[in-house]
Image (cartoon, rainbow, N blue to C red; front, side, top):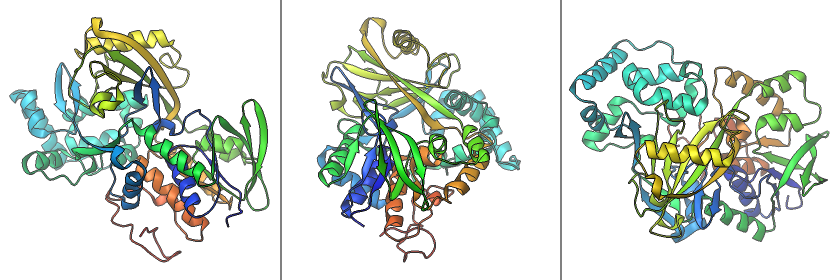
Length: 478
């Protein structure tokens, strides 16, 4: 087994976890990462000593092997951080996840009465079909609260109306949460819902610090992490994928492959595999993604606002979320008298936001930060822009059928496994992405785990993951 040629495509959380697990078993995988940094969307960029988390990544999991691995990698550099996030709505800040008492108090008596009436109507006569984001949320919060806090923000993120967005998105991201759950949490401190956690862990220098440690461990263990290595073709063989051609530093070379574990977007994967039927290519071409732009602003103030991040649902503001990196870790900034802010824009590759120049985006972000009352113009001294294409798989109404079609085809390729968010076109949290990497390696070692069952409609707590003999039912971890 140790002499097998194993190629891992993608150096994000899923791919690096798979490679690390392989190294721990005495194997020597080659990781091919297209970018110049590991971590994917969970990387950390650095500009003039300021560290920028591309997207804001909390480290929270009830999957014990993942938690232990995080702690092993970072030790004392893995900080405990108190969570504070709010929604900016019509000039006021509301706690999020929604604290029902806070929200009702700030909305005032008349509006609160309408919100509660809307919620009661939704509970008495819910929409019978929960097949869209709109109906899923409205059934749990009422249509009035949905329109205030969920509709516009969600449409910013995805670029499509909420009634065209699959309910799968809500079920994964705010599972178990409702107005009644928020009220119970406010009154009694019950906190069994993922979205209601009030503390998380965070690497001292941002999430990229975690993935650099993985990279170092893989290289030290005999594996190779190759950066700026773009996969351009996967060659079919009698057993599946026999070789992978990669372009690096302007030159192409072909690596033999006994096994391939891929976290690259499945659209790209399908495009690059030899001899793919036309209906599979069509299904892959129909999948959509949202791109992401982070505008980092450096503000010459010691303190700005207390939140880790602020959601901005207002359609009058193009930004979707504002990060305050100093409130994640003080070491994210090199000077305690200055603050770094990440103004996040969700867009599509080629649209008006994506194609704006860096200077135009910095001007826009600075203008909106001032308009929100979060900074003064005189204090904003510098800015930088980071872009990430294909950041979020879009959960439109057709995505599930397309993914099923592609999955059936990929399962005919015996030595290929797909893992992670883009590898499965599923908005996994990073712990679930890591779990798919772990289980993929176990499959190579003779076990049988259905990676597509990770993070389906189950409790976030993962209590279902009990140890089982290989091949007997659902996947298990000790």
